[in-house]
Picture 1 (cartoon, rainbow, N blue to C red):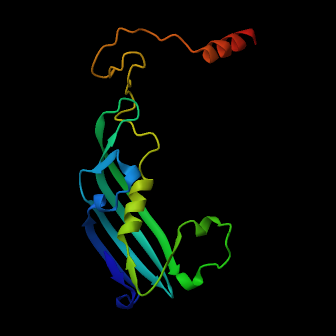
Picture 2 (picture 1 turned 90 degrees about the vertical axis):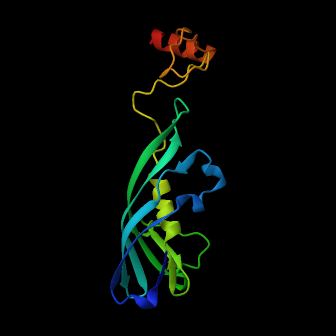
Picture 3 (picture 1 turned 180 degrees about the vertical axis):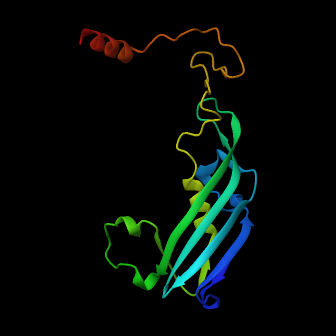
Amino acid sequence: MIVKLHDIEESIAVKGAMDGSRYRRPEDVDLSFESPIEYELTVNKMGEDVRVEGPVQCTMRLLCDRCLEPFPLPVSAHLDIELAPKSDQPKLPEVELAGEEMDLYYFEGDELELEPYIYEEVMLAIPIKALCNEACKGICPVCGKNRNTETCTCGTTKGTALEEKLQAFLKDR
């Protein structure tokens, strides 16, 4: 979605859907999109700067970090960024950012391509540890069976040497 800045007097509403797989990076191999990324944004012009704000949502397919089974994850995020002309960008090689500058991006020209910002917001909304459900039992470290679907007869695994030393240390305290 390209927004032409000269078409905006004060603000405009931008609504649509985009194909998230178009922006997938090589490191995003464990995820796919089950639905398009839908957005309903307000683009406000504030002098030379622009503020983009609104809900972003989609459904993704991820691999569970415990059992490695694919599962759908509904993603709902709120995009809230400010864009400033590239000419306003500090010229210093390293600049410490304050809290309000963390959501500040720079653009060139009189057009804004919003889809990369929408995709980034969706990626930031993915949990660090993606689980199919909180009660997921994971994979047995001995036999490799998915404990959610198969019963495992391996019992408890024997601890590592480091774990045994730590247990002995804690017992002596």
